[in-house]
Length: 173
Image (tube, rainbow, N blue to C red; front, side, top):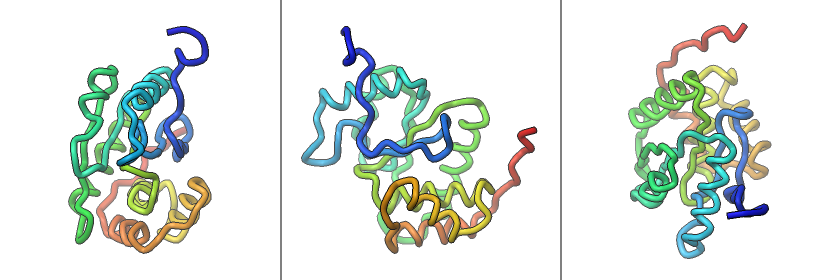
């Protein structure tokens, strides 16, 4: 592959949450009926070129996981139930994201689309990891980064994350 396509294309709605470390987007290749295999391959190429080490899928199904493996990208799958108490799953996810970031990995988190669920999960991570002091700040920051309001589903996820035990961040001096 040569020219500008050799570098791939960025996933739709790609947004840095923690600069150069943690980002969110819609599922590489597009979501549901708009998903395209060729686009998925181009986006996985872009992720590798940008130095991403891992894609974290919140999808209920294993879609894209084999494609990540074929494309040389590590992956992790954390299917979150669509309703109910997900604190246990969030804690496991947050502990893993924290470990990956501390080890220098560059991580992309996605679901089908960049909507309330991804916004709530990432807002909850910012709160849980003590990067932001409160739920209201986490919601406001994520809304500003993504460019639209977080709905009740996302806000509920941030609230659930606020109840999780967390360890203070190590000093970055």
